[in-house]
Amino acid sequence: MDVLVVVGTTACYVYSVYALLYGAISGFWSPTYFETSAMLITFVLLGEYLETLAKGKTSDAIKKLVELTPGGRVISQREIDALLIQPGDVLKVLPGAKVPVDGVVVWGSNHVNKSMVTGESVLVLKEVNSVVIGSTINLHGSLHIQATKVDSNTVLSQIILVVETSQTSKAPIQKFADYVSIIWHVFCQNSVMTLAN
Image (cartoon, rainbow, N blue to C red; front, side):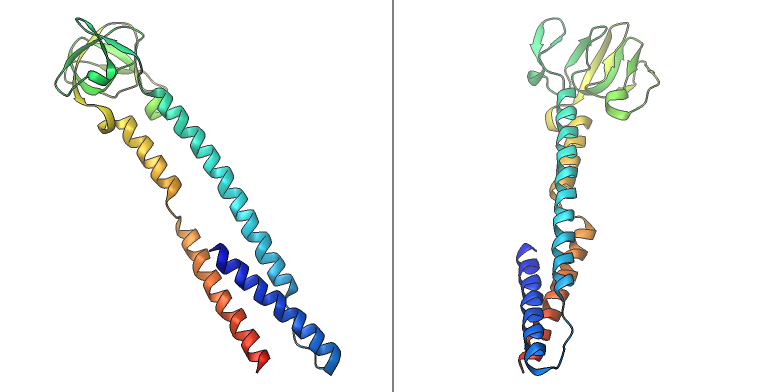
């Protein structure tokens, strides 16, 4: 798109200079497009600036989401690294600890704080057969959960993936801007060719 903007604005500027000089020499004044090329460059630069700001904020959001992933250790009958957890493992989540992976409660009853993942400020009661999301915080009592989703299959990992994908994909308005710049380029090119003939 940058090449199209440069070619289009340059063509408009060159045509405008040519029209101005031709008008000064022959007395026949054609319309000039100095302001068009200047405004187009201004809008493109403003758009790129806003896009950079949005990507920066998205990157910060991704960093915060990654920080929610449970690091370190989960206590069961023995202490293991969270990366070693496999689907089907039964884990004991102590009070105040993060739930290490997505799973189902198999023993215990307790309130869980899901605000980091869902934004809900209300504590949610989790009992046997209740689904728990990794990175939520177990509050007062112990819970035994059976792991169902680990690593990149967890809800938090899917949220991170969606945010990263949306950051790198083109928005519909950006596709429209590309289309408009192509049409503008063709218009300016045809105007220069018409004037040259």
